[in-house]
Image 1 (cartoon, rainbow, N blue to C red):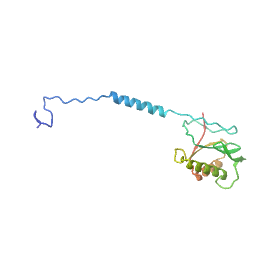
Image 2 (cartoon, rainbow, N blue to C red):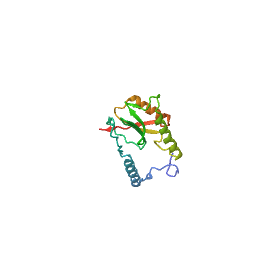
Image 3 (cartoon, one colour):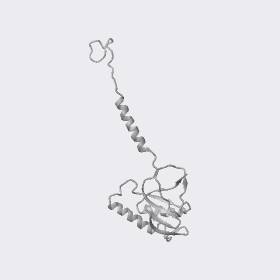
Image 4 (cartoon, helix red, strand yellow):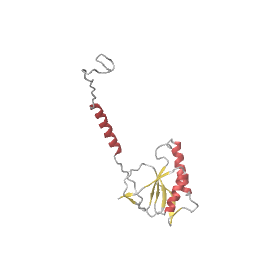
Length: 164
């Protein structure tokens, strides 16, 4: 079929053409890519200052946190970004007026409006609160905080713990 003079194939006497591939440039690119991926993936730790009248729960998990709006629950007060919002007495936050905490809702809505006016409402973590709660805080109060935050537009929550 394929003879020595046919244009589509190789004759039995001709060697096949050799193709060389220079891998040096490819290896340089891949090693640089690997270096930058490893450098950007390195574990980052963020230190959060605890209030003197609170003790965070313990955890063995190692997850880095981003800078989000912080809601702090101590034994005596509720704070948003280190600004006192409501007093805590006998484990109760403010007046028991339903599932939401009115002063917290007002403060969170104010923060949300300020961020929206500054064009920061679409940044990563803009809809997330970091809850730092004393380890003895009642789950009912945490639920009220989360429902209040969701009502203000902060639909995601993360919890701070102390690593062992």
